[in-house]
Image (cartoon, rainbow, N blue to C red; front, side):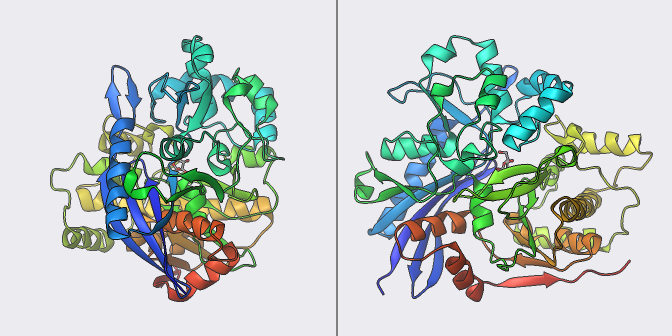
Length: 474
Ligand code: LFR
């Protein structure tokens, strides 16, 4: 069989990369051709993404990919969830692209939280809980504070949609990313009229979502990629990462995509709804083919990434990371853990100060050094992951035998072990760029090089390196 090369553009909130997947003899090989940092920038009281800068990096990455793999068959884009670009009919931005951690949604968040009937209605309609970053709240804030935008904008393109548009010239809303907005009908694959009405959003901004695998046309404006097909993959990075899970087909695995956030969830043919699910903040996000991925967002390594900023001595090299983690592992287990759901951790000016104040309120002492914070954060995440497992077992009436972890955080031994210990089930961590692999899997299926996702997972599972963490009794 000839080898096939597909490029994944994978944009995360703190870093982005372009990775080429080469499929030959039923085996996937990855080549990272470009990696770059990403961060939102503050201007006045608000936070924005540097979209032009990101697009430049995407182009640089794709040109490098084409130089190394001249026969690039296709490209797919996935990004973090919920953020969007408002464009006119010619595709021009009519509003700056805000970053989801911008505090502008606070008033809308509180209003919905305090209106029980509306909150239940919106949850029953969309299956998405009321969280500060929801696109619904962000868009409602724009329309309320700048009503002219309703006329100026012709379409709302979520970030993968917008990059797909820049690449192919086609404006489509992809389904997985649409499902993170709190605007999709939980019982169909289309927008929820009820939710659009509640948030006062113009229905004409949104097109009927396309499922992943849809071909959008050839790349325009990048001569080296003129024969490369743009494919709408699961545009939400978490959906892509879940697709890459070499899971047991019987549904007995719980998944964690671990990075800036820990996305803890599973796949299901039916949503998990009701008052208890709403209280537990279960988000019924969707898979590329229209099924469900009930999950909860645990704050993740954002806690550590931000705490590091307060330590000039933070590790730079891999060997320094290992040393720091070893020092953290030797410390006694902290008696008081962080409540990872406390909103004070969302976007504080200093994470270290926010952690110290949170501990003080709980009458506990702040850690003495960076190793102490690492230990506290890893143990707290482990505990939060275990809580999510128990909640899902109860609400979905399931039993999970293993937890599978992919993503940058899966390399963190301390967190993996803490998760196994707190949950009482083995944790299997894979050396896997989950989001890029799921992105590429969708392209391979669309190009008919692989039959379906189940086949891809089975083939992938054969070649992956993994490490299993058995739970230790206390
Ligand atoms: C992870 C992620 C989460 C989403 C958060 C905000 O990168 O996409 O799934 O809830 O970022 O978009």
